[in-house]
Length: 278
Image (cartoon, rainbow, N blue to C red; front, side, top):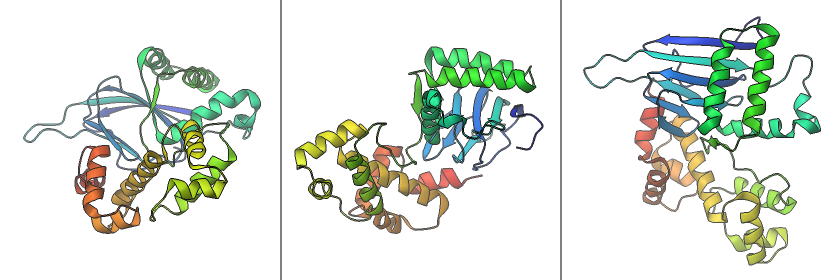
């Protein structure tokens, strides 16, 4: 978004949000004031409600929809959209400073999109609304205060699983090696015993370390990664469901359909239709 402002703040009003399925290098904070029917972030589709507040990192595919019921006119929408580059002007390395670790972690989590909830949302909403009325350095300072608030909150929820799940900070290098192996062998069967042997651990010890480092069991991690890849292929290619099932390592199209419905609450072709609809 080209602007003289380092932090751009716009109010969107009308019968739609003025966007389609897209992504951009700017980070984005969107507060839905009223209207709208659904929000798409990565591989997630969720209903919209007034007060919805989301923080997106760079290049996260997203869309906000306002689809009326058959025979009805679309309701009026209103949203406040804040966009900014993750680098501060003249300070490209600011996130690498040791004191910026919480902010750095926030930006990493925002690669999956973050929904702001609870008391944090009430405070953040006031700050986003205030951005409409200030400019220049005052708006930059307000953004930094908002990022500080979000980085120290436990009321943020990841929205999409389309980004490769990462080991937690401080995780063993062995787990990083195992995750790299899983990602590069996703279409193939992945066995815990093989992963344990690759990193030089016993099966039980490896399973405990993997769960501690990722928050998931190996089967959960692999399945989440396969579903995420399937969502991207459904959204961005014309491959058939059977081709996608094979490419993502599911044992059969029927197994893929069951797993996809469990995670996304719809069948693959319905998901494709909803994402590709403009």
